[in-house]
Image (cartoon, rainbow over all chains, first blue to last red):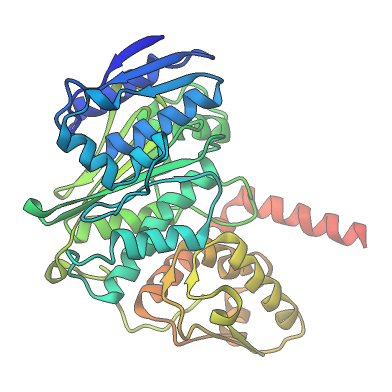
Length: 292
Length: 115
């Protein structure tokens, strides 16, 4: 049995390094892991989604996971109880969600379940002041993240999500993580370019029209562009981690980086303002009819 | 011919599989040179996989001119319109790539040999 300490995890670059380091330390088959939270004061939604997926990954390789609930500070435990994480991993009574957005596991693409999650649990809450049309627009864009994860991720253990509301910044965040093959592996295989670096591969994958879609006679490569545009014009924030590749869109910039720590799957972290006044539905609203 | 999307896929038009259902309804009508009215009344959420599979793919088999003549989109909200326009633009570029054209020609030739 190995003990791994989970510290306070926010969503700065170093916090993702902590998560990816935990992933790297738990790669062996039949590993027994005990997660200790005594150094943890807070876990953001990225940490909750990632730790849930990590526990599933370890168990899928015949390992064992123990969350040391008694090492958790009261507020951390309360947050994990509210979002359903405690119930998922230790049973007991299902949580009343209160102000939190549930932790979620998807083994298969469940359209209705996911739509319900995005529209009701994430965007349909009292604190989100957006019109129904904007809610539907955001749902469609965020669906593109799930589609990419299901179509390209090749995760054998599913996809993990968690959201969070940050009243101080009037922000709504969502993290979606899969433990599949990762974007760079798909791009290298598709282009037969094994020397492509992770950040080059991410750049290729985010170029409009480029896709590693398995059904080759159906066009693709539109979803990420739609999501990026929506995030940009609405002053949101999007970041994608896959292998050592990193894409960050926000504050009027698009940045690709090669990071030090490798994580085989793909993690998408997205933030929106939950304030109606800021929203523009599209940057290209025209009255021109649809034409081929 | 009238296709009511809400009745076939519900209010979320987002998946490849749902797009496939619509594609399978459009194709015979277009082959019979029949006009197709696609009605989106009540459909609320749109994503690119649905339109890629239902509409974008038609550009593999039919020219833009034919599709403009025979297809009409009714009651599509501004969000759906934006996604569909982007998908059509992308499909035009996709099927104009030489490697894709070659693959499509091979498929058509294989189909005619099979028959």
